[in-house]
Image (cartoon, rainbow, N blue to C red; front, side, top):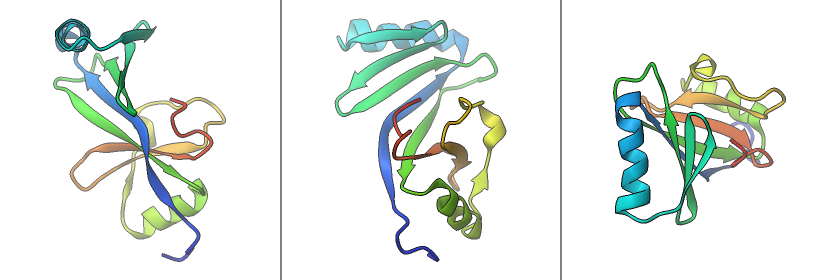
Length: 126
């Protein structure tokens, strides 16, 4: 690693991207079957405080099966981008739009799991 001060840590967010035909049943599973508090955050998103993790349940019209997306924080997103590029990590920024001025971007692991990489200040903000 070129920058020995660069650090990564797991974030507290996991997003479950769900096709419409699984969305309501999944909300009911967490709320009614498991008894967890499920909060609607937008028309197509609910949040579940899942221990120290926040589980986002997102309705995704163009998805045919559920996917899990993970959150990774870093102290320097620009240095992290260079480091990840050197390690041949695939950037996939077009997968979902991020808020303007958000310090982060999307990558995929070798197994195709989507991760949001964000600065510690923005980690957990999505």
